[in-house]
Length: 360
Image 1 (cartoon, helix red, strand yellow):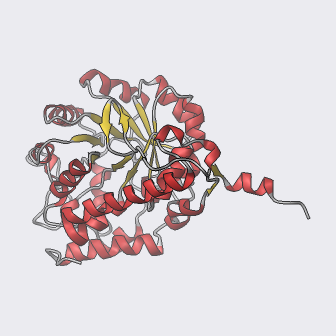
Image 2 (image 1 turned 180 degrees about the vertical axis):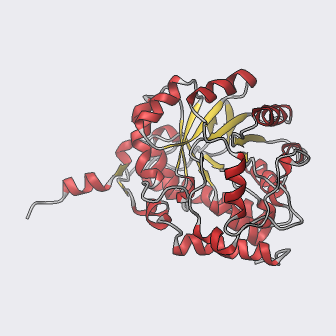
């Protein structure tokens, strides 16, 4: 791993990797369990000499249905942070989603060159700040808003509390630089938790989804939906898409893995808007499972941050290529030559497996 710029950055990287293994909460069971969630039903004797992984997301042509999820404070992982991720996504022909809490601003990321980029939005108590940020993202060429709706309060992140997590002094939340919003200062527990408690609007509701549509022409994806009930409300509120997400299993313990919740959301959507999976994707096989369950694409978070910490832009390029290659191989071995050929018949869920077991 490359030398990180400070002990704070090294501690962040090691803590984050430790969380994935030890699981602060139940992320191993609720986030990464997706790897064994479904079994494949491959089809044979199909010409798979040519595989087409291209897709269209909200009218934008992508090389594959694998996109980059918003992850905050990427310069804690690597000095180039969001710059490197943006360049890697553009080179791969896919979408990067920039976090509100990025260590690079929307304008700085736009300056890295052409690319299809979404902007993840937290709604602050000061709605003027929110409106200003949305308009800046639109002027910078961002194409959609991913509205995070599962964080009226920050979940109990015990590793952050133990380490008294805060940004190192040489980094800032660039999108809010120069605004009188207070800083993420050191605290007795988690500096991030204290910042969220002071800034994020706990009154956020469905009417705010409609309000956002009055201040921007960008389509709005609702990120954090896990149920059929909220899917129907998202449709009524005019959402352009849904991102099934449990926030990396760091908000509420005992929520299901996102892939376990995916089919419920897809069925409730009834094809009226695209549904995406965020979380738990570690292999190309996971991408295939998500599409077989009805997702239009997937977003990856931790694999990007870990590869960024290890090798910067080259690392992010590498992880995107690895997932692409694994997904292509899975398609070929399942007898699918295009995304539209991936169907529900290609997988069996645990419940279906149990029904197929012989009775003793």
